[in-house]
Image (tube, rainbow, N blue to C red):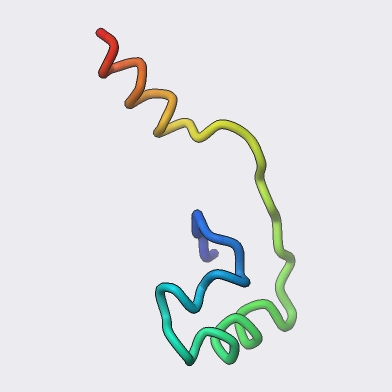
Length: 51
C-alpha cells in the first residue's frame, strides 16, 4: 500500500524526473483508490489548536 497527499501527476515534485516511470510501475496492476474529504489529522490538529 502506498499513500500520498499528492495526485500521481504531481509526484515529479517529490521524485523528480524518475516520477513517470515510478508511477507507471506502481499503478500498472494496482487498484487506485482516491479518498476525498476532510483530513482526519488536519481536523484533529485544528481542534487541538483551538483548545
